[in-house]
Every structure is written in structure tokens, then in C-alpha cells.
Length: 479
Image (tube, rainbow, N blue to C red):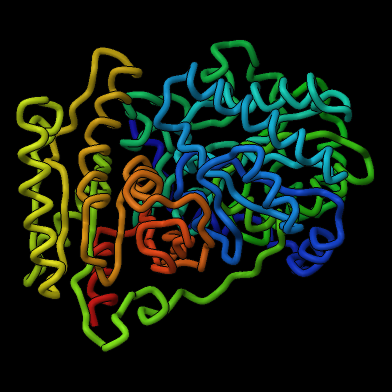
């Protein structure tokens, strides 16, 4: 039986928001603090609420040292760990946390690591927070971690947490997360929408429902930062705590309470969050959607090439958006059969022919979409399913990496796809987040080392936007 509830009626019955904006106060504290904030992003879509922040796609000691030497108060590291097996994700998170600790100590900076993940509850939880906490406790000098905070709220995606239940907004309804297609993910599926139960499920009973603390809407809206601080002050021994929120102001209040708990009460906390928390944690006010002229790459002589859209995600929302785009006229539409990509004898031929078609169309000023067939191929277990997904993504990425003509714009759809296009297709090692092409859809500026330096790259999450969002964006960028 569906647990969907009416969105408008539910939100109208909540207490009034906290009256005071806190963004400027938070930003001032971050600017003058001795703490560096690093968001470990398990896919590149986590930059969907921020701007003017760097994103690193590799984490050598030299790269991290260079970022700390710039005095950057906050930055992202794109780990793409959601595409990895648990063992590989564990090693990766330990390696990054170890290196961050060493560089932070060199520069005399306190370190705050945010484990940024999916607003629909997919990803390596609690593995990643456990690894980060254990590394900080073992190698760091600041004592034990008091709490792990779970904050999946994501405003632009309609991911709201009310009475500890995490919802996905669909039209006029709020649908419990476990009743959405995201919960059936082959690698990261789950059955519980109540976050207290979700923590118990994902920890395989190691953390009991009764042991999970909760910061409620009443705490945030009636008690404000002081009530949030008081609840966080009670956390000990890596205790789990979930956060309820439905607006950006709710996140501001929580972030301020967390800042006070860390600075005044010396609490040590690891946050597992979706994208909105990062925005509130560093005090970034909303910025207008980027114009098409800012995103587009037009030649110096005014000549316009076609744009490129690469679609690899298989979630139902992506398929609906792709269908809308394919209904558009005047596009080169290149479907790649997934069975051909995972067949070693057919793989080279299908990639080569698709590249040739894409090159000719883009050079002629024709927008081109390269997409996988829509039948989802899964393996016998989560690790095999991830391996198939990575093989398919690698095939799409090789088309981008071999392009000789620079498209007017590049849009990659889906987490693994957009990560691989960024690192393997475009050779990005450091990018700057410019802002958003549409709500929840980040735009990066490719660094000097990349395939098309200075060009904008649109990272379109698989689970964001209405059915016409992709086609509308392509139309806007094509004017």
C-alpha cells in the first residue's frame, strides 16, 4: 500500500520557518575559521547547489597540497565511489582521508570532511562514514568522533524529510523513498523510508533504531540553532543522528547549530549528506540560473558547432527525459545497444561508427545525442552489476575522448556517466563550479589540463528534473 501523502497539505501544517537568515553569518565564520571543508563526492552531481568552488578529480599529495596552499576554505573531491565495489570504496576513502589529514596538519588547518552522497539514499552507507571516522580517529589528534549525521534533504530535487521519513516529491504528492524506483537499485537497494529504520537496515542491525537520534522540524523551526546545538552536544561514540528539513532555511539553522556544537562544545561530527547541506555549511546564498551565453562555447568567428548530449543513466526519470529529447526535431540521434558494448567482438565497431556519426553532425552544427539502449543489464550480484555499468560508461566515454571537434556544449546524464566523461573523456583534474544550468544541474568550467580548456561542462543528474527538463535545456542552449 502506498504511503504517499499530499505535499501542499503536509507542508502547510508545519510550523513557521525560523525567522532569521543565517547565510551571511555562516559565510563570515567560514571565511575566518581555521578549518578547511572538503566534500568527498561519490559522484559529480553533488555540486548541484554551489558555485565558485573547485572540484578535484584526483587526490595526490601534490594536488591536495596545492589546494591548501591557495587558502581555499572549501572544495570538492570527486571520488565516484558509488561506481566502486565496497572494498574499493573503503580503500579509496581511507587513502583520501589519510592524505587530507597529512596536508591539513602541514598547514595548521582543522579538517571537516563531508561525505556527500545521494538524496535518494543510494551509496556506500555506512561504510564510507565508518572509514572516514576510523581514519580520523586513528591518525588524527582531535579525539573520537561523537556523531554521524544523516542529512539527505535536497531542495531542488524535492527530497524532503518529515517526521524522520524521507520523501521524494512527485507532482502534488510526497512519495516515501523506499516506494520509488531508486530503492530498487541493483547495487544500493533499500526497503525503509523512515531514516531511523534505514540506518538499522543499512548497518545490518549494528545500529538499532532506538539508538538513532533525531533533529526534528520542531527543533529546527521553534528551537533554532541553540536547540540543534543542544541535541548535537548529546551525541557520543559515533552515534547516528538524522535531520528533518524541507527548506533551505531549515538547513541554515541546522548548519549554524552544527558550527556552534563543533566550535563551542568541541564536538567532532561526520556528516553524510545530499547537496543542500554543503551549500548551507559554507553559507552560499542562491545564485540565478546561468545564461545560455555563459554556458555555450561559440567560436571566435561566431561559428557554431552542434552540442553533445551523452546519456548513460537507466533510472526511469532519465528514460522519460530521454524520450522527450528524442521527440525533438533536427537532432542526430545515436543509440548504442548495450549488448554490443559488453560484447568484445562488437564493441570496437559500434564505438567507431558512433564516433564518426557524432563528429560529422557536431561539425555541421547539428546537436547530437548519444545514448544507450534502455534495457538495464544487471549481474548476478551488486559487484557484477557495477562492473557492467562501468563497461557501458567506458564505451560512451571513449566517444567523447576521441572527438576532434569541440561541441558548442556538452551535457552528460547520470552519475557514473558524468564522472567518467569528466575524468576519462575530458581529462579534467581540476574544474571550477560556475553555477547551475537549471535547478539541481551543475555546470563546471574545464581546467587548463582538460580536453577543451575553459569550456563549460553540464553535469545532469539522473534523478533530477521533470520529464521535459533535458529537452528544455538543450533547446535553451541551442538558441
